Image 1 (spheres, rainbow, N blue to C red):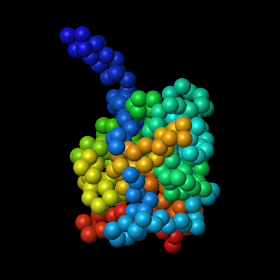
Image 2 (cartoon, one colour):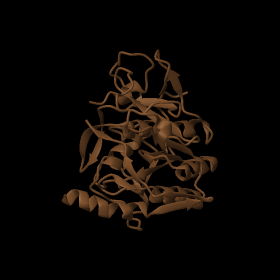
Image 3 (cartoon, helix red, strand yellow):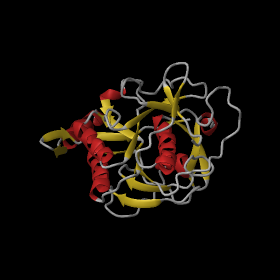
Image 4 (tube, rainbow, N blue to C red):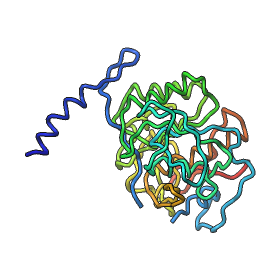
Length: 293
């Protein structure tokens, strides 16, 4: 009885928050990290076209130097495997993004860290929009995207390893950031449903990433459908968890930053309009590909 009572009291408070943009008004819905708790074959998989894995990781000569990758997520633990910058903390309205949460720490390490990542020379900039429990509101995600627009940021990569209910406003904002000259990489989601039913995975301008395992099978949890543009490893992925520790996690949250790292490398190689390298596997879906041109 007490639990039901509390829910009935709290529900109107949550629903009373709204966001408005270009004449559209929507509830300010919750958004969540797209990770599920779980040996990492991932770097090996992304640098060879055929299975079985050869246990050799190709050390590319271009590593995303000069490219900024914005991680819109939880905060990032500072005592970690790599350095990062704090762009802004939209939860506390300051420039301190440090946290004990591991989600963005893990995500960021898959982009940049020498131990677990791809684009070792890129610069990871954290925009904190989620609390340490991995949840937050659409409003703050939009504020982070506005930060990119208002600061005239271009030729950068934006990683969104988060998602929630379908939002036209959030999708519009993602498309505006893309139109400003950036590449936006988003997690497809972990509901084993159609990614088009969620945001920002349904944004047309985004590169939406689904998850596969070490056998090139689509992960059971991964969202699918026409809104998913590409797949990358997302099951049992090792990455940093802070305090010089590592941890295996699964989720499309882990798939997206690999593609973000590949995109950073491609921008260094070919310029701001460069597209991700990809190849089709027998099951006719596309996987990101890391090797130099």
